[in-house]
Length: 597
Image (cartoon, rainbow, N blue to C red; front, side, top):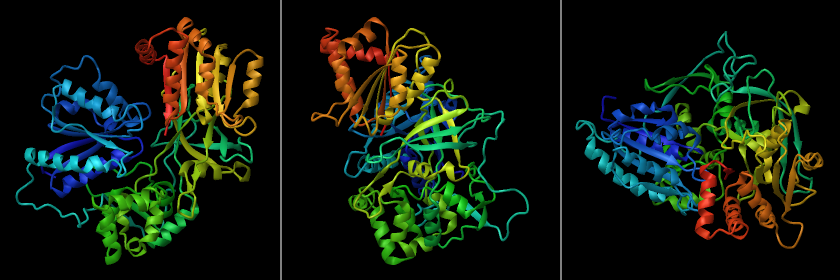
């Protein structure tokens, strides 16, 4: 469109920042403005000096880290050599998405805002701090901020006077058209683009490796509340290589029952073949979809029908609805006033897109297939810490997976898409292949042979440390200290015999914490304090590295607090000096964390 243009760049881990960015794009199109929406790492960052107006939408992950799809941008923008006038042509605004229960709330957005000012950019507005903890979610901060933003943007980029705004109830054109084929094409076979054994390039998201699953074994006791699996893949000939601390990404699929139900509710023929065509010249087709593609393949492998829908889903569904009563309810859910009710209907019970469509059957049956990719987000890959070393298990890759299942007020239990799908696969019943690829993780281990390593990994947080210990022992590095936490010795003590065998060879010092085996709960932070003099000796006198992996909620803060008290009690430091000591360990990469929500 030859209309006034601006740019929206996002860094998104779970999809919320991408969803907000696409909302900005839609609102721009309604106002007849041109708007490009891109992930930060897919944008050539050197071009920023030529951009007059940029909106940055950034999530903060883990302990104040940038999302994976903005890490390259993050490294570039903080280069010390960048001139302080680099962005003096640019007007910008930063919208942050975070969770105020974490200490580094919206750290990425705040730091980016300051950095853009340092480089000469002009801020249109103060940084927006969206908060997951608010009863209405991030929208409580985002909605009023966007109203102010549009006032500023329209002042800078007035839309063409001869074109009226497209009103909210009118659907925008779909991104793609689905051209249905009357019969199957004579050549070509449907399937994912995959990296073939012996291929030159390593597998990636656009070309995953279909890894044969070798085993899928439950490693928690039969009476334990949680099903945890040790899963092993054969990566022979894949070109995949990895080191301790690296991460495998797995692309899950929807269950056959859900695919069938979705097609029934929408009146779709699962075997119908189509080709996808973008409406706009600068939009490309998703690389994960074959051309031609069947409806079954689209729903099984691409559309995230098991995810909890966002507000944007209800906005578009309301536009497409021809049923008066259903449309009225959908409009209410998508309005600013209806957010509390939407939260109660959808977010609190974790109701899925498929379940919502079943609740609005007339609307679902009338959805034009062209809008499926606008309405339903793509299934995202899930990341797992690799739990094995290539030095101990050549051509194999192992992961430790806690199968997510919980009850809400809805009758059906809620299930994690990827973990439930993996748990359902049984290589004993026939060949099973899983699309996967590997990327570097956030943990890097010292290469010097005598450096001690302290690892704190409660629950499945121990997975990357098993890889590290296997790797280090194979290299003759024996100064390994593992603090492992679980509930019961006989139920969820992962790899107990392996640890014991390493202890007898003097390759490992294991310190377990069994939280439920005594009246007072005992966690890893308690064991750290008990061995405070050893921890201080290793860190201060012997240059040890300290690692922490596991659930991000309260454990990292509890462990940091335990370290602070060790620095004071065993190291004789006052409180400010203990805090400075901890900060120095983090700055020099001698305190590293990998946590997940």
